[in-house]
Length: 180
View 1: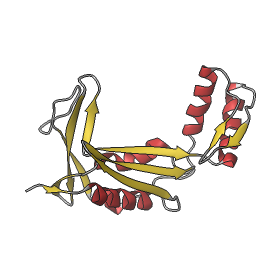
View 2: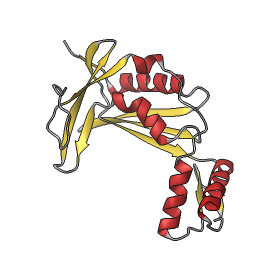
View 3: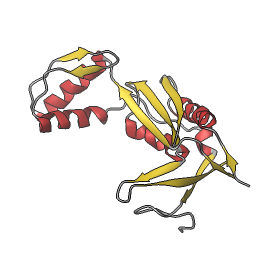
View 4: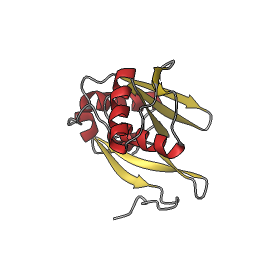
């Protein structure tokens, strides 16, 4: 029999997996339940890249969205060998930067590409670039900044307890539950 975990219970597991995977990094993990679904928002400062975080939290997503057919499908998972449905349809990751980190990262990116150094200032909740270069230059700089990780991923006991069993198989490129 399949067990259903609420969004709050799923957020608890996500919080534990992140804490074990990235010790010393403070994550804000907030769950939201609304009509039509539920989601978890993760915010943190500097630390690992968004890609590193998404690898750890990816298996906790209860749904996927196929934009080709405008379809929200189901993911199936396991916890400790038992089939479960995780209560958060989607998990969003938001990495913020301190002014010191962003200045050093942008400096390195500008040196790499040969761009002039833009002005960086403190915002309400994160530092940002004030005088943007052209679109392509700005995109290149931010891609380089996003690639900079301040920590390595550690093994997580919580992450090891979770498995992905597939999805419902209806979306474009879906794996399906019975896929080999």
